[in-house]
Image 1: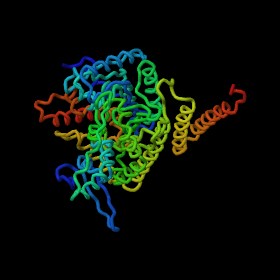
Image 2: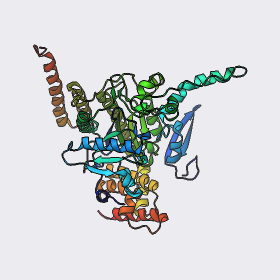
Image 3: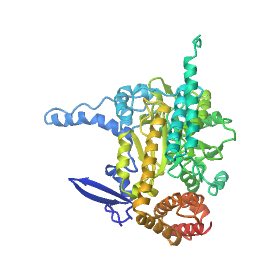
Image 4: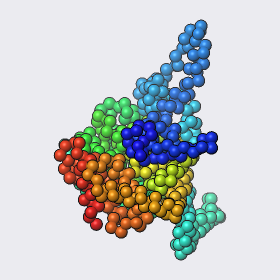
Length: 189
Length: 352
């Protein structure tokens, strides 16, 4: 079957859409699917998220400007900030979504910080710091525990009870070891 | 000019495709990438040639002696197009690295599982790529390299924003964890769009096999974290891992449903794909990858006793254009690459 969109390539993706109680199937090739992320978002984001976020942040003010532009003089262009270290400008930041050098983060804090919430799940770094050797014991504990639990689910599903028992022992050993450390008195000195 | 190190690569199996590994029938590979930059230096995208070379010298010096075996050091700027594509097809580098006029390097371990891209979008992009579902293992591996580099280099870091990166979407941990999943049954059942939409709502990204800008040929999907700021590395890995486990379950259930209630439909799809691979004389890369995906599903479901997963894995890499031009039967003219691919596939499937 040929792709419904380009009519050239073999359709490899078939999406069932239900709207108004009616089911409709769309047949697409990988290329067209990639070009139309709204059809399920498979594949691709050839655009730069940062670029979009900065432009979204700008948009409302543009619309406002457009409304009052009938008799009001043209609104002053956004203030352009220049990074003192590398002379990258806030205008370049907005058009490329990229920064010039590490110091740009300080220079453009006003532009970047409001955009961070749209890009990330938080605004403050809580992970690794440079020059800490390896992970903290707690991080390592969490990673190992989650891997073991996943493994346990797998073995239970596969009805491999012998292996499940072994993994359960390892989990008990791991959590036990941590609790012993946490509960050990006199370690605070 | 052809690089002697790269001459050895095409014939050897890639480090991220194992003939058996944890959950490897559905989770093909796991990758962790960390972005790091040197403080006080312009990011590579608009650094001068001299600045790029200076950064490369510093990073390469600092990286020496970290790993058990010495790094393979490849100067990307000296490579011809085919050698570059060999590295790309083996998922050792990204296209962004090819854009630098100077100072672009790849350091990699001979087993191809750990690598450092120098002067990609950031000064340093560390990568660990393992077969199967091994996110925590991949993180441990690359974290060790990262810690040693941080001892020797002045890394750009801010207490609030974390690791400072060329693009603010990578701030914080500057870590991208991703798993490549093979989901043919969900695609056959038309359930993939729903699954993918769900992933998007969880703040994860879905991409095709070769990352940004590539399509989902071969029923291959790369799932990775979208956000890098606000969560620690283990939290990101844990959250991604839980979603991956769900998707693997969905795919397993879809495979079971197809086997239970639509056996003829499934056999027909797999049989036709196999027939195409065994008998075609002209095969585009996309068609070959899609058919190989179904063949792989058949092998996973133990439908073939004469085709091994080893052969499927091998073909998976060798049908790509650069590998084909190095290893495949000679194409008489560029238009014949599809014929050369078909010959390679027919030959390899005849061998045990």
